[in-house]
Length: 392
Image 1 (cartoon, helix red, strand yellow):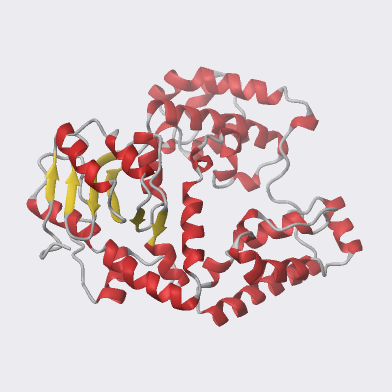
Image 2: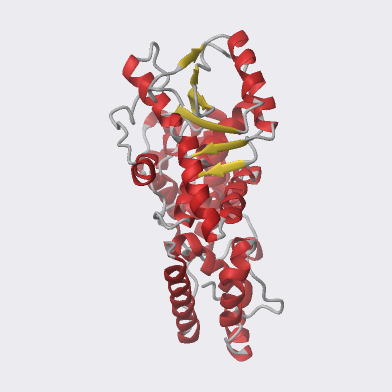
């Protein structure tokens, strides 16, 4: 490591990046980080790439060194790539290069599995393991501004300089606990590029208030939300910049048939109605013509039966007990959405099985126990739930 972790070498030319990348590809361990902006856009805007081999830190300016292709070879090299809370960084790299850094080790995931706590920030994890207090004053920097100040650049360098020392400490602890493979397995899950695929057809499920709508209204919302999702990507704007949720709900609920009715809806202005109103009306007309059997089901189904509610409580209790025994946060072992998925795949199903989230190391540690607990629901209860269409 550099004597000063806030020291760095700048890279602002294609030639400089290509030369540095050749040495990075030989490193057994490599710390990586990105700085980006996603305030007024749909996609991340990459502002800086930080790299550290444990001795030297580099800051790559992607606005100056525009040919990032040498990084693809680095990402495919055998050395371990260390990041903290890497989910968004993975999307940034995938959009920029079409390839992800692997093998991947996420220190946030690893810290949780070592018992440090769930979803700890880089600053808190460095303080806990290395006793170093990091600066926080540049966390809301505009990383697309140029020139970046000396303080901003020093902050960015420190943000990557401690990753390898952190890796060394956490992997030693995980090795003693027999959980090192768990950290690599969970980190590797972030390399699943299907997370970045468009799923516009399901976008309506993320609209707050959709649970109040009936099936016909949901059909309208489904069409409108799918259009908004596609437009947000095409225009590179946040979804709310295209159409706000309350306007989507108003359109789906009232289902106006004429342009003159649009301006009476909340959050709709003249310019917006002029630009997109005809599309909205066409989508509403098409949704109104959908046959009953093609309408989406109500989001808020019948409440679960007492037996299913009791099962939910038992599953949560089992997770809490196991998490306490392992000294890991329950939400890391099996969060609520994972238990919901387990119920959907077991109660009332002819072929009950574990969800993907409970495979791997979790299957032996907690998954099989939870599956047995779920299968304790009687066959008659399962049949009743299935007939009623209950979705726990």
